[in-house]
Length: 124
Image (cartoon, rainbow, N blue to C red; front, top):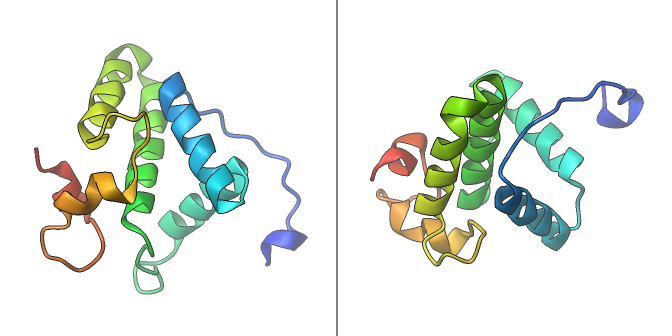
């Protein structure tokens, strides 16, 4: 069923550090889409069967997805994950501008395929 035909009545609460929220909202504004749309797109891609998943068009989308996944984990165990998420965000925000951009991720694309895989993202 298409997205337009589904009634959007359910909510998902995700707790993330305020600087992460600001960076995410800014990115969404830059792309001309809502934060809800960005999160729904990420969830739909994650739920798609592996054979139909499309590769992310931009490396930063993987980072945003990773941050969202980490934030969901943080909601489950806020005392343990809150500082880890901030630490991970700081590690990825190379230029320390409070946002994770494609430029921040360029050095992580080890195989030069134009995308950052989870293994590339995990490297120190």
